Image 1: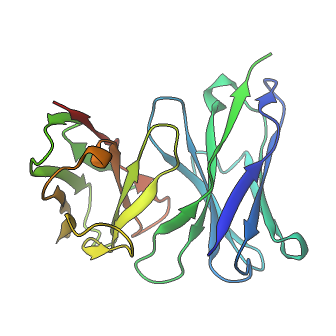
Image 2: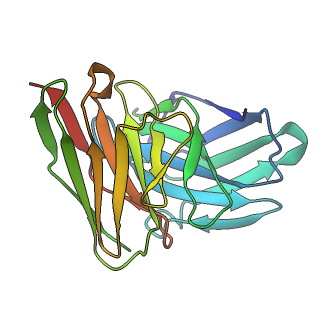
Length: 119
Length: 107
């Protein structure tokens, strides 16, 4: 079955760019849509955005000016870039598949990657 | 944005209890409502999609109901492995939004 795994730096300095990659195995990245979701420690879940192959993206308006999601089909990976980070961006970042049916849902999720924004 | 409001935010219950969690949307979302379970240190997992459809592999003691703006997740007989935090999520429109969560604790 499809499995997702996040990777990237666990510590980012304020004002810099957070970059994470999600590796997809067990299925084609050309189907479905691929999401980033975050969760500040001890808090709730916030949807960041998604990409639908080959390149349609939808972002949360609250983050839209700072977010870019891209896909590399050859590597079966999709990526998140979040610019100008502050400590408020400290969170566990999850990647998740969006099932392409209506209504849709997130399944499966990666295990999550904790990113701390601190100098 | 569609706001999702869950209640209660936490509850204490005993093994074998029937537990009900509610979720209210700020506008009608038909049955575009999903429920997730999150255990400490783990990613969320879908339990119920489209308001009432049980995800494959999820025990039948979990059920969902509702449409429009009001939804319910019910655990018919709480088991030790069910102590976790539960989130509702609307997929009616973007940005996709989650409820604040309901933490189910052992009484």
